[in-house]
Length: 126
Image (cartoon, rainbow, N blue to C red):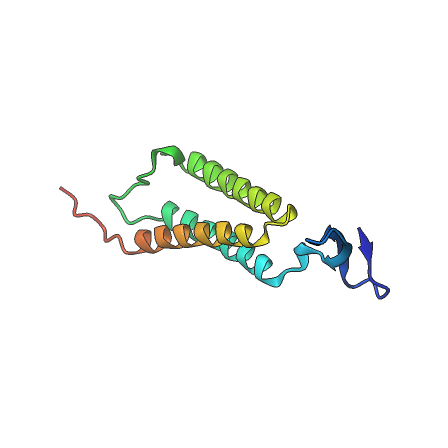
């Protein structure tokens, strides 16, 4: 990896369609990609927080996440990190747009789950 003269912008070499090799901005400097990462991480945290504080009588409905707090935290964090790693692999291989779509899809899914969790009223006790 080479750097600019002012050492502020990292560059990588890539092949253009005509076979030429030229510098391009390093994909990790893409602000939209960084924002997608932050949105995904924030939505996972919000989903986990709302799941752990569900209204009385409600429980996590996804059997993959488990029933105990430890299982839910472990699975949510683990799967979130796996998703970030996979997006990083896509982005590093030049599929930045696919990585952003992947992250935004996950952020939408987790945000929807958090919204659902927040709208659950306490269940009446029998």
